[in-house]
Amino acid sequence: MSASTEVLVDFDEALERYDPALGLEVHVELNTATKMFCGCPATFGGEPNTQVCPTCLGLPGAMPAVNGKAVEAAIRIGLALNCEIAEWCRFARKNYFYPDMPKNFQTSQYDEPIAFDGYMDVEVDGTTFRVEIERAHMEEDTGKSTHVGGATGRIHGADHSLVDYNRAGIPLIEIVTRPIVGAGARAPEVARAYVAQLRDLILALGVSEARMDQGNLRADVNLSLAPKGSGVLGTRSETKNVNSFRSVERAVRFEVARHAGVLDAGGKVVQETRHFHEDTGITTSGREKSDAEDYRYFPEPDLVPVAPSREWVEELRATLPENPTAKRARLQAEWGYSDLEMRDTVGAGAFGLVEETIAAGASPQAARKWWVAELARRANDAGVELAAVGVTPVQVAAVQALVEGGTINDKLARQVFDGLVAGEGTPEEIVAARGLAIVSDDGALGAAVDKAIEANPDVAQKIRDGKVAAAGALIGAVMKEMRGQADAGRVRELVLERLS
Ligand SMILES: [Zn+2]
Image (cartoon, rainbow, N blue to C red; front, side, top):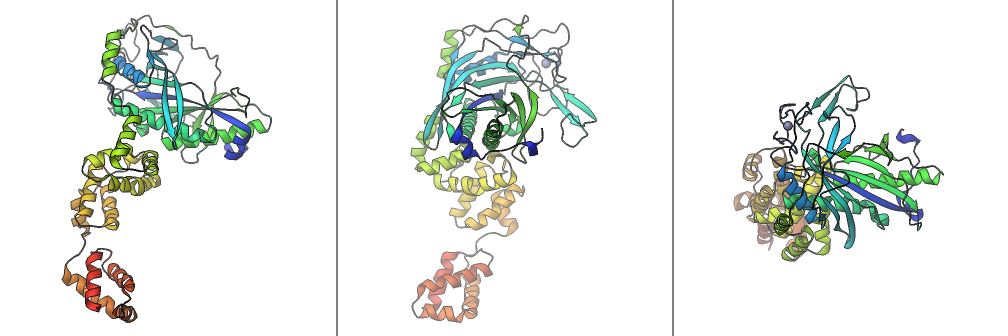
C-alpha cells in the first residue's frame, strides 16, 4: 500500500474522537562477552561469519548451554523494572523459517518469562504515567541479511542476498508493556519518554551499550485507537525496529493519524507489522500478522530450566544502581536546574552527557547551554543521536574552560565545535590552528578602536557628549573588524578612555 492512498486525519482532531492505546516491545542486546547459548564472542563488527560455531549455526548434534551472565543481566533488568523474578522457567523453540536463522527456530521464552508483572513510572512534562511491564524474557538474536542491488535495500528488487551469522545467538532481552491507555494527546511523548527512560535504566545497569543507531536497543511500537470513552481496545498495528527516540514519537503520531483515517471512513484497521521511514516520517505496510500465528512453541529439550535461587536474586537486587528517576531528582537539586531546564535537558537526550560534562569540570549551566542549545541543534540537523554528534563531554568541558579563561568567547566556541566535529584535534589545537584566540592586546585593539572612531564621527561625538550607550555601535564595528575575536570588555574600556 503506498502512502498516497491513505487519508490522514489531523492528530488533534483524531484525539477528539478516539482514545489511543500504546504498546511497546523493546529488544535489548546484552553486552555479554559470549553469545546466549555458545562460547562465540558477542562483539560487534567482526568480519562476516567469523564468530560462529556449530551451536549458533544450528548444525546437527550441537548442544547449547545457557550463558549465566545473560541470566544475571535479565534478572537485574527485571528487578530494576519492579518485576517478579520466576523461581523456575524454561526456554522454548519458536518455530519459523527465515534465512538469517539457521536453526529454523528461535530459542526464546514463551509462557515462562524470567521476569513479569513490573512497572516503570514515566515522566512527561511533570506528569507521571505508570507503564506496566507485562514481561521481560530472554531470547537470542538472529543473523543479519543484506539485500544487494535494488534501490531500497529491501529484498524486493534485490539481485541477491548475503547473510552474516555473527549476530545469530547474541543474547537479547525483550521487554513488553501492557497496553498503555489514558495518555491521550500525550501518547507520542509517553512512548518516547518510556523508551528514553528505559535506555537510561539499561545504561545505568551496564548490561548493554544500548545504542539505538547500532541496533543494541530496538523498539517496536504498537498502536490502536478506540472510540473515545468506549474502554475497549482497537485493532493494533505494530511498527517494527524504530531506531531513535524521535522516530518513536513520530511513528505514534503518524499511526494515530492513519488509524483515524481508516476508522473515519468506516474501514477496518489491518492487524499487521509496518515499517517506519526516517526520511518521510511515515509508515508503510509490512506483513499481516494475526494473534493466532502458530509458531508451534514447545519447551527446548536441549536446555535445563533456569531456576535462580532467591538468595541470588536478593544479592542481585542489592547491586542495582540508583533508580534513574530518583537520580534525576537528586541531580536537579544539586545542579540548581529549574523544572523547565531539567525537562529540556532530558528531552534533548542530554542528561547523561551533561552529567559527564559537569564531572569533567564544567559548571552545570555551561554544560546545559552547550548540549541543549548548541549540540542538540547540530545533532538534529545531522539526524543523529546527541551522543553521536562528534563531541565528547570531556571536550565540551575543555571548550568551556577556554571560554572561562578568556581565550575564546561563546561565538568562537561554536567554531571550535565545528573543528571538533571535523576531527581537527583538541580544543586547544583547534584554537591555535584556526587562529581563534581572542585579542586583548591593547596595541592591536587600540588601532582598531581608532579606526572605528574615525569611520563613525557622529557616534564618537555622541559619546563625547555623554551618551555612553552609543558606545555599542563602535564596539560592534571593532568586533566586525576583528572577526569577532576582540575582547569586548577591553574594547569598551578603550572606546570610553579615548572619548571621555
Ligand atoms: Zn557459536
